[in-house]
Image (tube, rainbow, N blue to C red):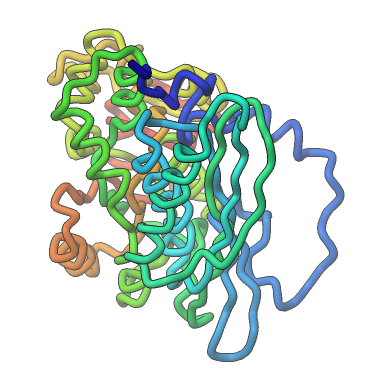
Length: 367
């Protein structure tokens, strides 16, 4: 009898959890020369944004991104679906609509049968078909670990391109999907994730963020990104740094996957969450009583804030007046866990007295 293939056994990490840590990435990039100035490049690498944006004409901007990773699940078709959904999200997070994709494929051909590899690609194609686009080609190589993802091109009106760094003081922050995917993936790799946990993990990681293109057009929406490998704290910090603002999160309002909380309390988490905290934990101030109502230790709280999300939810900055419409639009599109979780401030906020004394560089406060 043939033993079923477990894709996660061929990878040291999985999903967006296999990203290079933020601090190491900064070291790698720090000595690179600045790119040549180009007035048509609306978004480059200056703002840690989700994709590059190039102005084609007064009505169209081209959005280009690439995203790929090692397996987060064992089923090849599901792996392809998750990877493709995650890659498309970068286009939606910029306010665009995808138009074309190319496959990025690296496979250990001496370990995986052609049928398994074909199922991975078929999973990716199924998601792109649902998004209304074609995978028009790609490139494949022989690698020690399975790798799959997409390079995606999209279009948006220049007026509706949404960067992650344009939030204004007073704006609120909305999160569209609950957190905890990294924790569920850690439990899966250990063979202890329940069938219900896997079903929830698959539901969330294959839910397209296509509503982002509509959200970007709503009046009062100022900034947008999605939560992926650096966790909620990392991507929220990128928004705060880019806007030169302080961001306060109300921990009690942040949605988490209930089964992920259970698995966390049983000791399951990813190494990526630890690397994330080591990279930017010094910029985060935690309130003294944060998480106590949920029975969380300080270490568990840190893990939740830095848990890497594969194909995570949109993170939207908008004016308080526009928040009800943003939330209603998300709810109608099937994002039933969407919540307002924080606010951008220009200086010390009302909750400052409840917080520990912040380090000078602190931009994110959780209370």
